[in-house]
Structures are given as C-alpha cells and as structure tokens.
Image (cartoon, rainbow, N blue to C red; front, side, top):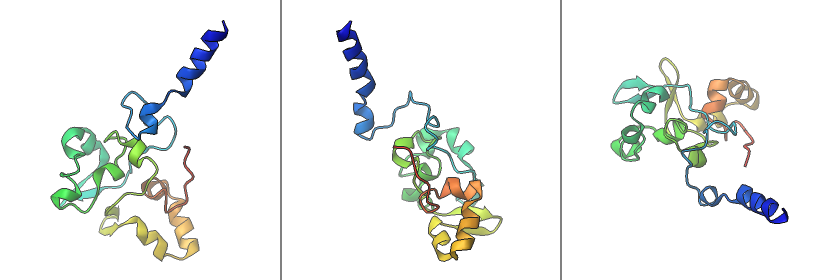
Length: 143
C-alpha cells in the first residue's frame, strides 16, 4: 500500500517534458490562465489577420520562416501562442512585433513604456492590451 502511494507521488512529479521546455500538445493550453492569443489584428502582406486565421493552418503559419523570417513585422507564435501550440515558450510574454491597436495605429509593446505611468496603467487595464503585452503590463504568471 505504501509503494502505491510512492508511485502516485512519483507520477505527479514526473514532468520531464515541461522541464525541458517542450510544448505538451495534450495539455489544455489555457488551463493555467497564462496562454491566451491576442485579440488584436496584425498585418500579413498588407492584409489584417487574427489568431483565428493562424489556427486554420498553424503548421505553416506558425513556422518561424513564415513570420519575421518572411519579412513580416511580427513573430506570430508570440502573438498567437495558443493557436501555435507554443504556450510554454510564449504563454506569458509580450508579442514580439507590430500589432494593430486601432484602425491605423500600429504599435509594439514597448510603446506602453513611452506613456506616463497613469496612461500605461489605463491602457494595460484593457484586456486586449493586457493579453498582448502581459510582461510590459506587469502580469505575474503562474510557474
């Protein structure tokens, strides 16, 4: 009976894949609350796109050579970690690159640091900004 309890403890602590930084496709990417795709659009060859569009063909559209490697102004997995199944890599990091805040307002997360503390706090209180720039907005993530 004691051995069974020991095996259960061992199984619960057995997270080698996570320790190595590999994404676990069987894990619900949003279950820890740290992995949300940005709701903001981004440009792909002069066309505004969203993470839902990325999720329709993640194998191609999440590939590193397809994003910034193809001359885009955004690292797609950092903007759409859930769609790209890259939650362990990007789940609680800022989007790397440009996203569309308002119709003709393209920004990067570092733009928030140029605002006054009050303006930054106000912008970060918007879930679309907080989700896109969690690190800059001071989000504390669950390890």
